[in-house]
Length: 285
Image (cartoon, rainbow, N blue to C red):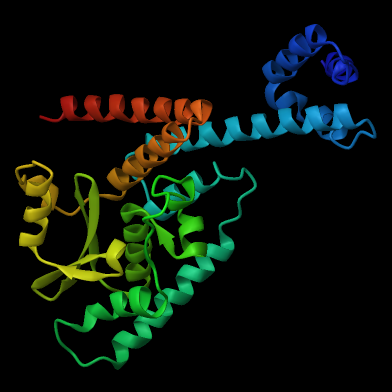
């Protein structure tokens, strides 16, 4: 097998497209087994060989990430943070989440400190919106709304801009670190955040900088889009449903930008999740 891989690597720099096609397919079909040889080729003094080896390595690594993400998305016990950072690996296969986890930890500590200093009362949880929206300036991105940077969690943390769902995820992950009880409200086309304050709750719109909203505001939003309110839309959404919706957002982003391969990868994951969901619903008594 190693000899076959070595032969394919030798032919990787061939100028003929008729040769390159079968060589590339042979290396791709070998998968992870060809990675050591490809890594050596990626350091070749020959520019053509080096560049082609790196391209194949990047493709194999992306496929590994896609398979890992697909497996996680099919689980029943999905954690939002882990799921979104797995999605971030689609932006770059060597993505390291540690700096972003530290950033979320720091924001959670800052909100916790503000809660400790705030007077007791139902308005105390608003410290989350005041810190993230007013002080740090997290807000929705209207310009080039469908850009993948507005979907990826790590890009939204860097830019303090994003889609409604991505910003809600940031608010939710910070709230959890600060000890606040919070949950997403997944309306069609818009995700909001519910913050619990004792027996009452507050609704925030992170896309608008954490602006407080009422249930009537939500009803008016639905009516504006020709939708009749459904009780399930106002229920607390699960981590699994948010990760699934995040995949849909990223798929739509790639479709809008003409990224056919990336959109097809995500469509396959979404289709698999939908099939599993349907089976689980059918199995319920």
